[in-house]
Image 1: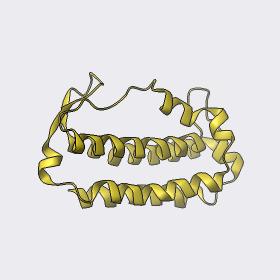
Image 2: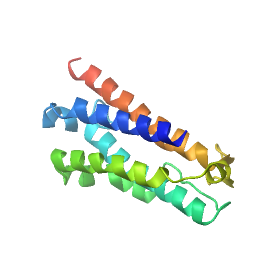
Image 3: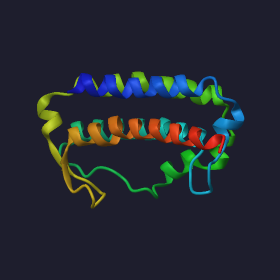
Length: 161
C-alpha cells in the first residue's frame, strides 16, 4: 500500500511538472475566475499541503491518537496561495520546490508499519471524524495531488475559451 501511494503521488507530480514545464508564465499565473486558483496557486498549494500532511503523519507516529488536521481557513494554507506569496516566487523556483516534494513523500512514508497505518486518531475536521493514519495518505496526499492534477487540466481547458 505504501509503495503504491508513493508511486501514485509521485507520478501525479511528474505529470504536473510535464504539463506545466512548457507553458507560458502568463498561462501559469492566469486565474480562470476570481474563485478559481491559477496553476501557480495550485502548485503553491501542493508544495505547502503535502509537507503539512507528512508532518501530521510524523506527529501521529510520535504521538498515536493525537488530534490531527486543519480546516480550509488555516493561516499557513491561505498564505501559501495568496497572490502576494505566489507573485513573489518564480515559476522555475516553484517547479523546483514541487520536484523536492517527491523525495519528501518517499522519505515521509516509506518506513511506516502496518500497525502505524492502522492506528486511529480524531481529526480536527468534523467531516472526517476518527480515521486511521492510512486515511491521511490515501485522501489528503495521494488523492489530493491527483485531484489538483485534474484541476490544472481544467484550467488549461479554459485558456482558449
